[in-house]
Amino acid sequence: MTVPLDVVVDRTRGGRWTSLRETGREWLWRREAPERDDVSPGDAFVDAGGLEECIPTVRGAPDHGDAWSRTWTREGEADVVRCDRFTLARTVSAEADGVVADYVLTADPGFRFVWAAHALLDLSDRAFPRIRDGARTRLFPEAARLLDRSWPDGASWVEGDWPAPCGLRLDRFGRDDGTAVGAVVDASHCCVHDRADRLSLSLEADGQPVSIALWRNLGGFPAQHPYRSTGVEPMLGRVFDLAEAGPDDAARVPASGEVRWRLTLTTNCRCA
Image: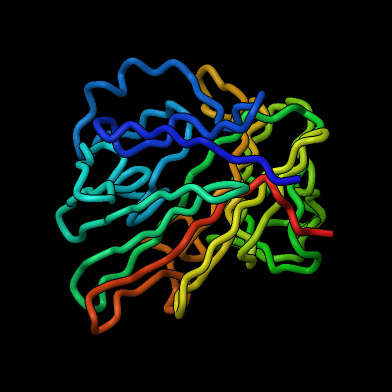
């Protein structure tokens, strides 16, 4: 069954997707964050939920990137943000069973970046993500105490196979347990199941590293006043922090000065 999706974006507050709705269901989680109204480029991230455009990094500096804290403008059919080292244009169009977002980043050749569609989803504790079995998965230091092995000294991440890298089951969200972990999976597609509902997220980008990042915060973050937030984040790159990216872990602008990619979100999951 195909069901259309309606998108609402807030250009004045970072180009954030504030709603992704099908009939009878809102997929995006949101929280009250009035301090978001007063942010400036370089400020610490203010989490209002929805889907954020995180670029040129997610963790690190600037916190959650340089686009979320800036005003976007409408130029023709595209939403556009201009940052110090790059310009990002996004064109969102409706499909029969969802939406497609086409992106164009313009920057100097050789510019490296990580981008994530930082989608925080409004899910029940019975929801689970489905990704192809065996996909290589990176875990980061916040997961150390949950693994079946010791964390290697000085390591930025460890790797294992989906769905249970290093003994940590990630193919379920579950009830709040006071933990918060992030992972980056070597995959281009994820289907989220929540009871009878399905949301498919997929990413296409020729010649660039493509991943699915997960954020499973079950009341473990932040340390002061933690809350629950669960994210499925199609990503260009293989790390959260651009500063930790190896030669093949970040997207790179070619000689043309442009990188193009496509994000597709549908209610028609094609996973097994």
